[in-house]
Image (cartoon, rainbow, N blue to C red; front, side):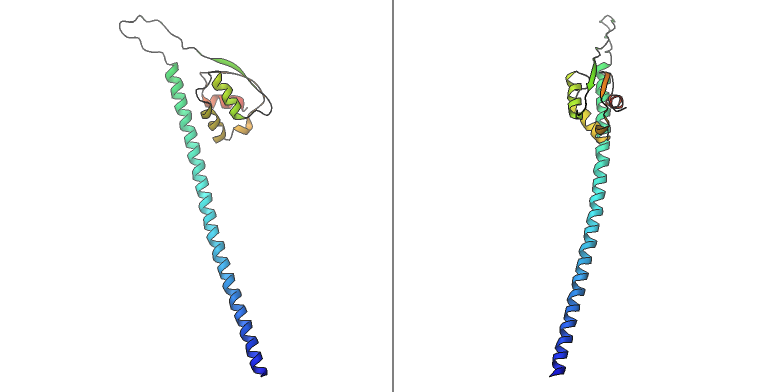
Length: 156
């Protein structure tokens, strides 16, 4: 009878060890799977960041091309007399106060006619990491400036 109880005890012990080993292997598989998922997530975030930077650059190029097109003098036709037209340039003094968000500044610039689209300016500042580097002060800006030039001016 003692041998039977001892054999049952040994069997229970071995069964417990087997369950522990199985659980340990299962946890290790889950951990390695989530590591792959984290790597894939990090890679996707990097690609998203790259695409945002490319988009900001393209938006800047588009805005510059639109400004050049609006500021470019039209070529006179043969029947017209050649009079020189200077495109009207809008200027303003932008006053940036403590606590102003980049979206507020972009809206002021659009309202004043300095930029064509406040969303482009706000996206450019955010994508280039400049939204948090805007400095308090007064800045002379005009409509012939590109988004990059405006951003450089207000983030010195």
